[in-house]
Length: 476
Ligand code: SF4
Ligand code: SF4
Ligand code: FES
Image 1 (cartoon, rainbow, N blue to C red):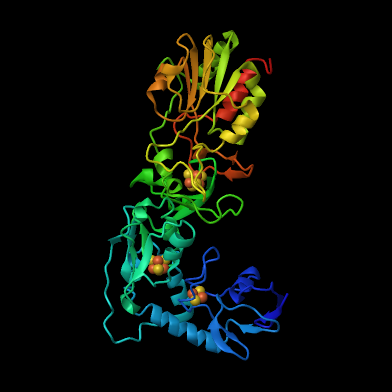
Image 2 (cartoon, helix red, strand yellow):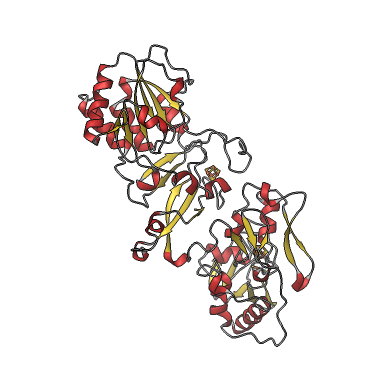
């Protein structure tokens, strides 16, 4: 355990650690562009220079510690060197921050302000390069903003292993390009490079020019795209920046989704499907309770559902694998004993979807099937032929496969033709409208939080189960 000093503070480091790792672990900030804790060291941006007593200036991200080492991160020599490095890195930068999506969360902006703060000293014309080069249908590269830190290249080599990116040409003509025989298009984790890029060179086509980040806030959530249950941030407009008249829909829409680092589940990454959750959550919603397609009040719908359950001789429940831990517990507590319960996959893989891989993606495309099966068993989709009532909770079941004589109570969040065919239909909230938890296949429980108000007259399934159970007089 080498004892080192950083800025005269004694620190016990672990053997083999770099100065950068020791600094990060002890809350000492050293600037970096190319270094990333989950990637190999490239050591090419040079902004992490520190001064080591007796050996001068060197980069901290690739410097192992040794016993008695004395490191200074803010000496005059370090400050002067950082300033020179910032001038060199921004030498050919177009300084188009006003239209750049990264503005507000760009380390190049922050470091220029913190360590340089002066206009360019160069009298040479800037080296121009291509703007808006499509690396894939999802990602656009602005070559002029690229500082060639190589984080994106290393990600595709070391994490997603698609080997899709490389650097062509040399010096200030260096450019990131996609390999022709290994297109970035086929990398299901490609959008992580947009987050990884320390500047505004890699842009998400989906988020491009949609919002300035300082108008947005992240709400912690869980991706329901598969049973991994990756931790995510759902970005949406801050309440204090709500639009009053213009484009009110922007107040309740998902602007982007990014990973929320969770070492126990997804580390710092998510797959592209997780980025596209707006396509799932922003589908048209079911807004009103109904009986046989006729709009009724929620109380009338619940009363009718309770009467059907009470009268049934062979009731079956198809339990949602998108139900939260709380909803599954409420169903178990209030209603499950009255039903023959089967866990239903609400979602199945799309035809062109990657089924599973070794990094994150799992074959079960539902977030809580594991928990639901632990509670209600793992039986097949076949229903007893004499079932006279089916409670269908969530989407994913074709009504034509239900026993024809069965009455149907249907809880669903989305607009669907089946809603009007059910004897009783109850519109439910989705996870962006309520708090809850999912427990993934490995037994890790993650929380999600509400970020939007409820749509229409949608109600929480958890409360519905409690009320119907009470109307039936508690446990049978
Ligand atoms: S595109 Fe971004 S992540 Fe890739 S090398 Fe350039 S600056 Fe680094
Ligand atoms: S791996 Fe699964 S849970 Fe994670 S982001 Fe992708 S679809 Fe969502
Ligand atoms: S962060 Fe150390 S050289 Fe880039």
